[in-house]
Length: 151
Image (cartoon, rainbow, N blue to C red; front, side, top):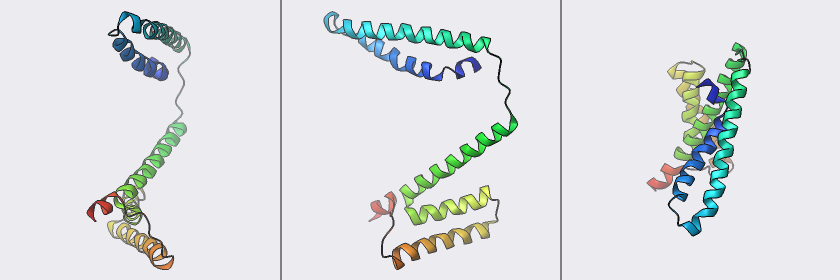
């Protein structure tokens, strides 16, 4: 399985070409010869590429995973997940409620703060966003998909 990890792109293309080839087999003789010839050549070249990648992976020494590199990858993945959660919450609940909810979750589970501190920070952030944008500047922030559906 580790040998196939380096060939993920070739495997993805194979997964795309194989169903196309299968559906092209159902075409008539006249209309099917061009797709079948192109897809056959593509399939043959992809299989050749996969064989070359697998042989190269077997010959290459296995890289040693450094713990600091693995920790950095984990932190980067966690940051991407938190940003994705912020975008999802802001889209569903709105910017103010989504940001406040993400603040509470981040403070509780990432920063390991107590529930009272987490909820107080989240309430302060939500109140600050509402005061600055809705009251002071007079512009509303995105209300969220659920807010639009409930109107």
